[in-house]
Structure formats: C-alpha cells, structure tokens
Image 1 (cartoon, one colour):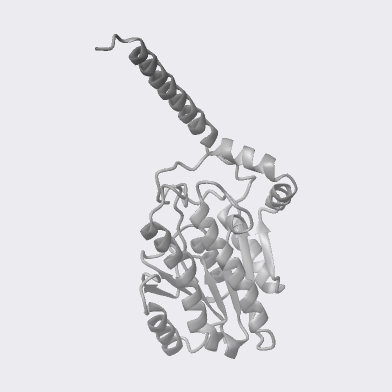
Image 2: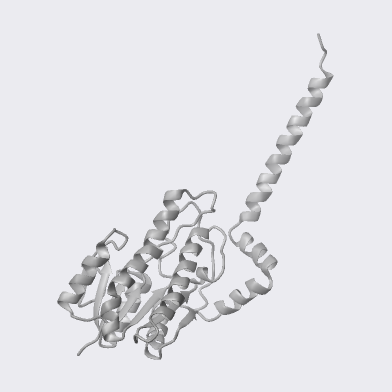
Length: 275
C-alpha cells in the first residue's frame, strides 16, 4: 500500500520543495494550502489552516479519501519584521495563530491516524527558535514554541510508534522574506549555498533514518554556539545587521540637539530684561 504524506504550505517555498521530494519517493502527497500548488500533488485541499476548527474538517477528508496518513509535515508559516515596540497585540497573535496554534491543532487532530500507521510528524521550526534575533522577537517566540512542542510531544508519544522531527532551517532563498509583514526590511544574509530542495532532501533523509532534529545548513550550529559563548558580541553584531545602532545614534544626536536648544533658550531667558 502506498504511503501518504500531508504537507501544509505546499504551494511555495519549503513546503513545495518537500512535497516534490516525497512525491518523487513514491508517496501519495496531499497539499494543504490556500493557493494551488505549482507541482503535481495527489490531492489539493484548499484551506486556511489558521481558521478555527478547519483541522477537524481536514482530518475527516483525509481519513475518508485516503484511509491513512504516514507523514505529516507542518511547513506553513509566515514572518513579521519589527521591534517589539513596533508590534501591536493583534500582530503578535496573528503570528502565533499560524506558526504555532494551527500547527498544534493539525498535529493533534491527525495523531490517531499517525498512531495507526506508526507515522512521522515533521515540524518546520527555525534557527530563530534556537536563538533570539532583534526585529524578529515575536517570530522567534513562535518558533521557540514549535521546538518545545516537538520535544514534549516526542516524549508523550514514545511507545506508540510515532516519530517527531524538529527542523531548524536558517536563511534560505525561498521568497519567504519578501512575503513577510512588518516595517523592517530583512537585511542581507548569505545563504551559504543552501536551497529549498537541499533542505527537502535532508528532511527525507531525517525521515528515513528517524532523526530527532537537524539544522540546515549545518554552519548555523556554529553561530548558535557562538551566540551562547559570546552573547555581548552577538548582540553587537545582530544590532549592526539590523542597523539598530544607526537608529540609536540618530536618536542620541537628536536628544543632544534638543537638550542644547533647551539650555540655550533657558540661558537667553535668564539674560532677558525683567519687568
């Protein structure tokens, strides 16, 4: 019997690349996304997974049409580049709805099918879930949550045959940054030769050999370690990357100018003739 893989966010980026690899490996692939995938899939379920209750409907359709699920890949997500001060409550909640709550709800809905097949859950977290990044605080928080969910779920399903893999991608040219929200522009960061197809191939290897987690590209493990060992240098380097130091300099200059103007005005006031 052919195995079945369901990939959220399969219409573009990492989700599309992952769907393509599993299709090439002989899986029947279900793509769950709002836009029709550019690649051939066995079933496209048009859905906004952040909508309340949609996961129950998706599970019913998959069970009715395919009768099983062997691999669930939670690849849907979005970014928002802004400082905490620039974020509002609605923006933070919006990020968590898709990046975390939708992922948790879909996973829990499909757990019964995955237990039957002794299947695999793959959660696409991020390097941002393993270290903090300025101007990406809420996004980091969602990905930290995904990593925590992966680890705790792995312990809970031990003995059922279900496997859980947590994936931490670094910067990969997929168009993700261009479609992200927020007032900040994503800075130039080298991709170190990474690609969506490269991550997809590595993910399939992780599935085949039952890895617990992996980072792609692996060079980011060095950066994560350096951030822990040299936190002050990491703060300085990341602030420069996002040009926050330049903003502070402008702020300091403007504050200094204002203070000088106030002092001058006060001195002139003292020298003015009193009536």
